[in-house]
Amino acid sequence: GENVEQHPSTLSVQEGDSAVIKCTYSDSASNYFPWYKQELGKRPQLIIDIRSNVGEKKDQRIAVTLNKTAKHFSLHITETQPEDSAVYFCAASRLISNLGNEKLTFGTGTRLTIIP
Amino acid sequence: GAVVSQHPSRVICKSGTSVKIECRSLDFQATTMFWYRQFPKQSLMLMATSNEGSKATYEQGVEKDKFLINHASLTLSTLTVTSAHPEDSSFYICSARDRGARPEQYFGPGTRLTVT
Image (cartoon, rainbow over all chains, first blue to last red; front, side, top):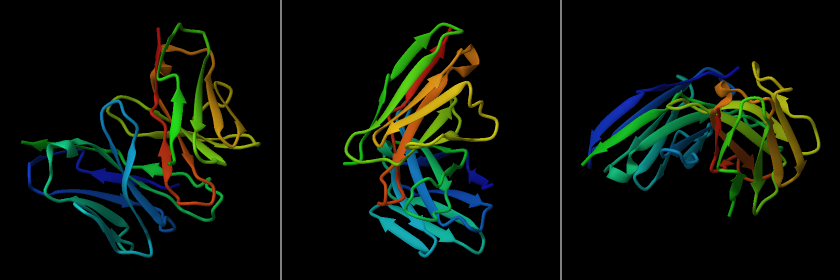
């Protein structure tokens, strides 16, 4: 099955600087890569996702890059703010159809702390 | 749109009793729902995939007779933890995927189970 590794496990960044979180996956058939933000005791919330037919996607201060050959993808947060502090999870999935039963395999998470 | 609710948000039960957790998609139909368990400071671990009208698919190592899943309708799935023990104490989160739409999984707010 799929195995997703995520680094670093913790990351502290000065407010205004950029943060980068990296993930690698093992299943070359995986084609959907979402990133989730989870605040303490709350539900994970999707912040950005990318499909394997795209190399990069950007949404305001958040961007994701995908290298299919190397099987890794990264989350980039620019101009970080205190409210960006949370745990971030990457995930990978192999989407086959619109049936919707393809599962996500999550990375181990990165605790991001923005230092004011 | 795409709201998933979960009930209860917190439950404390005595060892040996059973607890039922409900997961509802409020504004969309979910052919598939997923049940996760998350221990403190750890990632989300998929327990089972719940398909409307059929038996759930359990991940390796998850006891199907202990964690009973029923997906009775396109908007409701339930997880019953039977004969709960202290080691079952965890944060249980469900997610649902909108049939035929985006691949995104929408997460419920989670249920904090404490077994005394």
